[in-house]
Length: 487
Ligand code: GLN
Image 1 (cartoon, rainbow, N blue to C red):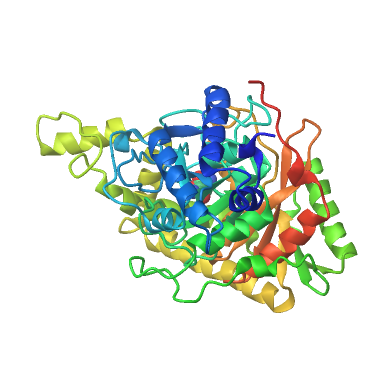
Image 2: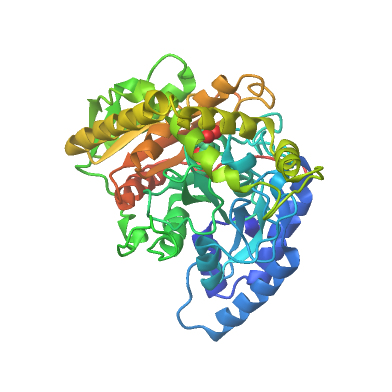
């Protein structure tokens, strides 16, 4: 078996028992990348030399023994939104096409401190805007389960890399579904933690009131281990919560007895693929059989979530992206004066979706429209949050599909942004409310494409989500299936 196909916890065990070295594991990951990435295009940048050096150091630490952190020597991919010292960091955009970061963001620093091996930077939708990774200015990533399909987005490169065994685990970011939806499309586990759980310092900003960092992994235990490594307070991010990091892996008991699960009726509506609906219902029934108590609930403001999100997210993006002006970093066009240089740099540097959002967001924030759009959206956002507060009075977690369909065909939705926006109909409310949610595989459709189950939890109750996800995973075999990629 290719060692890069191992889970993080299995690989870690082999490393600690000296049955495998980090250098062997790292070389196996690069071998797999070499064999498959000309088809999948999960990576924008590879860090081969640095990774082999990190693996050597990990092997020395393993030889010394003592207290070995779970991530020591483990090959991990980073979405190209994480600034990474000395490494090209593009955010999927031409405007950062030559940007080499002078420092590591906090999540990356934490991975490195724990001895992880950084294999490279994964492809993504430009500035994390999209649901298919087709908005990347640098490459089109293909779904390892079917090369004609999208991997989901915006963390599509990270999800595809994990699914294709090009790395053991990856980091992504999720502003409206960008970890969970690609995880569902590629048949891996993806967790968006509570807003404030993981530091966003050194993560290129899209919509700052919703952006959150999280892991994409091969199973639920790996997800818990990754979260333990990256969570925690960071003085460099004023929105990061000052609370102790639980040992999430302790929550993996396999027991769901007595847990109260809410199933929101608004999530099973027209537009959902019948096979997705069936698989999610089967998953809920299985958890019920194992002792969970299932109840139908209502989240009445769900229908406004997509509209609210596309006001709030674009407004915040228009402000965050003002810094890309061709002066401080990134692409600079040759204009005849300062104004023309600003305008041309942005004209040449940003892709169509990013420009569309900057215009939408600027409009929503402009005098005269601010109250009608932005303020109103923020008010409805509060109602969406209250729906969840009320539901969590009665239940411990909420179960839904992650996305209404499985991965769609490349090119299918690029001409119709609204259709693309609807891919996130089930994931967006969670970001508006700042809640944690996880996607894990719960079946396959008739075309052999993976289906995702979403588990939404109370604020900072990642432990319950992981507990449920683990119990479901233990009772099923979906997570063991691997895509067959012709090499
Ligand atoms: N697909 C959504 C969007 O395009 C969510 C993106 C994200 O979570 N970064 O904005």
